[in-house]
Length: 205
Image (cartoon, rainbow, N blue to C red; front, side, top):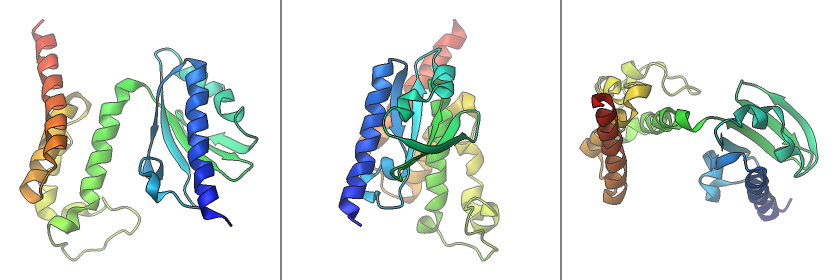
């Protein structure tokens, strides 16, 4: 099997999906996750893991009519596994795992994604207490395995209404334990503080 060709075919398919979405005029963005976000990791077993952000009013249409996917290449099988998501297999072996979500839900999704990464890296910052670890769910028994870190979690998960505050707490936590890229810190804190200011202004009005 030509692994280089297989990798190129998956990246090309993602580009084709993006172009197909653009032509519909009904999508704002296509966001890759996993190896699709870090394409140097793409291999023979990678799927196309992505989110589609529809323009306002077009979510239902993109979910109910998958022509923007099925018109690209012959499809062998697909099914809807959540209200917002599908799993789809092309006949050439490329597998898609995707969701279609409104833009207003993105802040909470990215906050959760950032927190998942932080939990996964806990052992880098401190030793892990002896406990029954679930190899498939890193967050299970986390408070027993990393009691010091666990005490900080409530400040990093403040809910949908306080995503900017949660982001600032995550940045603060990371700064205490590891060097942070100054450009990324400035960008994230700037966005978070701007959102907090805008919300405060809106509440006053």
